[in-house]
Amino acid sequence: MKLENHLPTRQLQALDSAHHIHPFTDRGALNAKGARMITRAEGVYLYDSEGEKMLDGMAGLWCVNLGYSRPELVEAASRQMSQLAYYNTFFQTSHPPAAILAARLAELAPGDLNHVFFSGSGSETNDTNIRMVRHYWASLGKPEKTVIIARKNAYHGSTVAAASLGGMAFMHAQGGLPIADITHIDQPYWYGEAGDLSPDEFGLQRARALEAEIDRIGEDKVAAFIAEPVQGAGGVIIPPDSYWPEIQRICDEREILLIADEVITGFGRTGNWFGSQTFDIRPDIMTVAKGITSGYLPLGASLISDKVAGVLQEKGGEFAHGYTYSAHPVAAAVAIENLRILDEEKVVETVRNKTAPYLEQQWMKLAEHSLVGEARICGMMAAIELSPQKAERSAFAGDAGVAGLITRDICFANGLVMRSVGDAMVISPPLVITNSEIDELISLAIKSLDMAEKALSEQGLMKAAK
Ligand code: PXG
Image 1 (cartoon, rainbow, N blue to C red):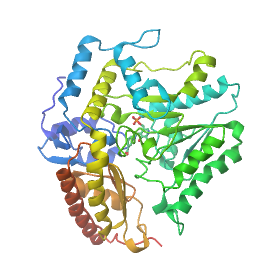
Image 2: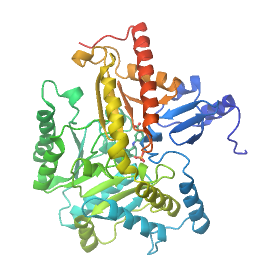
Image 3: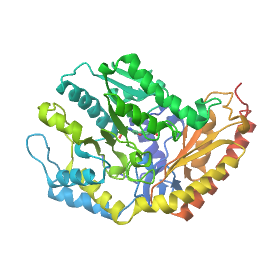
Image 4: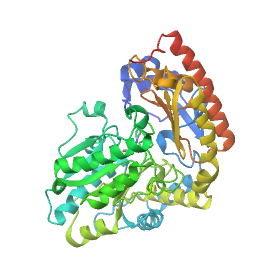
């Protein structure tokens, strides 16, 4: 069959319905209406097969940091494909993009994260991290240190191991997860779980849950703690100010490694190159993916400290682990170019000093909307909590997530991609979004919230849970 991008929409939808199984999608429900066919994109805008334009408030899936259609990234891929489209790095070979990208990441990363293991995605990178931290402790003569502590409602990926690290109960329910030796502590979700505690009291309480969990399991059995600086897929959960300093103190005092999963927060999202800089976190290992190539090609990497890499080099022998596409030369070449543009065009500085403060000013005004219980933002990732009774921060009486989905569909129909997580609405726009595009995003969001409130009232859904 000829590959064809311009068949009529209905024909494309029929092919898709018949043969394509989508991630995280109820296939029956999707096929009843047909997928929206996205055919091209430019800057912060997507276009579908009907010619409709949408402002992409999610940067694809939290990844298109430089926006769409950057010719330099296309040229970098094309040049590298012509020169060396593929070679592996398993058997004592390397290639220029692998070496140059590893060095550049070491330069950009905070602290002494000077060593890089490449993979093809965030999930694979976290699988690598599990094996690496266990191998690290075994190399030090402590093979019983295997347990990894993660958090409820965390997202670390979708492979068997990464979904086990994640704390999504509905994912664990499919396929018998989590795998052994992974435990989950409560998350620092102030809006949803703090009761009467102040943010700082609550942040300390949730951080100290790590200490209690280490004691429960026994420090001699714990290998690492993994967490996202700001939970992304969990609903842009920004921890209280007291949280990360206390987590860092505990990790410093105890013999465990700290893994910062920066798949979303890396490469400028929070207004610094890494979320670890925003929250003053000193990880032993950092997970990156997504924004490393602005999503133009799949690539992930573990950034590893001198301490961990030193032990592995001196005592670890061969690390029996690797992927066909570890350090894929074309993905690495695109990443190098992506990092060059982020740096030379001062994208991260512009986010920190100009566009994120402006987005914050506008976004926080959404808190005044009668359907919104809270607005929160960290750099270029933000959320609003929908509530039928904002003064009490009430949840909806009906099934969780219904109001969110109704609002998401209204946003889509109005030309704005804003994702729902339960009954929170989240955004994570391309970092190159301008102030006037932010104005457009906010006015589409307000229009959509007005329409959603009306739709929810008409359907009798504006009732608060007891
Ligand atoms: N860690 C974090 C923090 C992530 O956000 C992954 C790991 C896994 O990366 P890969 O490349 O294997 O997908 C992610 C991915 C959503 C959504 O609906 C979020 C992600 C992926 C898919 C959907 O918000 N994040």
